[in-house]
Length: 407
Image (cartoon, rainbow, N blue to C red; front, top):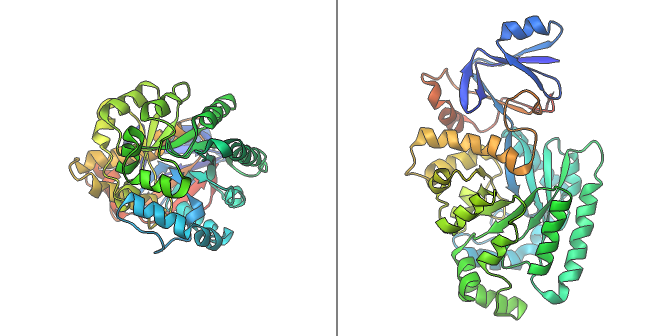
């Protein structure tokens, strides 16, 4: 048993002074420090540095490790030119992205306070790295394939990758999961099979959805830049589904929808009605010219969202605090203090619920996953602690997963 004492604890969305946490692999008790020390006299006592805030570990719900080699290869500014550059440089980027590179990115995430992340895997190449990583990893095996002629073969490959993630070693913190690439890239027949598989095994489920203007134009009218793309690469000019048909495929199972920048209020309301959630990737959306997700609308609808970095194919770091600062700038119309608190909640409590993890909040029975952030001075107003944490943090002061310290 250990007792950790910090100046502030992030409890139920508020910053509480003069409290401590008793924990082993899980949180056992939360109380005044003197009461915990009296109750657990043999416990190891850990006193954080002055001006330190104890947060639950942060959760990055949507990461592509497979493209970590990208620095200047891919074209930013607009979605379709970016996608063309992905196809052009994909083989070289995949070849250059070895385990050492992906492990470095996992370590960088760890130092930024990320105790868990959702890894979107197209080929399964990062499974070994995720097994060795100390973080909890929800391993999203991604399904892609819109051509009915190859659908069974692609689904068979997908099943093999799912099975591999289900048989990871007992020492790893891997949770097998399912990802659907997008409405434009997955045939409805195998989409239904994959959703049924996730539901059968109660695996987390995720999908990219309405990321770009081009996607919307293609799904609604079979027109726009995607028409040229599909004619060039796939010899087809007809989308395999519509926006409505795709959404309905997930009606019976809560899903984490990624991006949703081009979703209408009606569609967002439908996602809320069916119990879904959204992953918001501010920098990726800006870099690819996709627009701004109206998180104020999500808030008004009480539609939960997480904050995620996406991958280095559309970002410059996997640091969650870099993402928070970008969100403060992107959503410039929002009151900055309230937005800061919303971002913290999005990447702790909301993210844990979306990925079905027993973490994301400091409550008895939750996993002992913590991040400690040391501020430059004692805050004058406690309601601003989330803002000061975001502005002043590049790396956390300490990090615990399952009660063990890793930073």
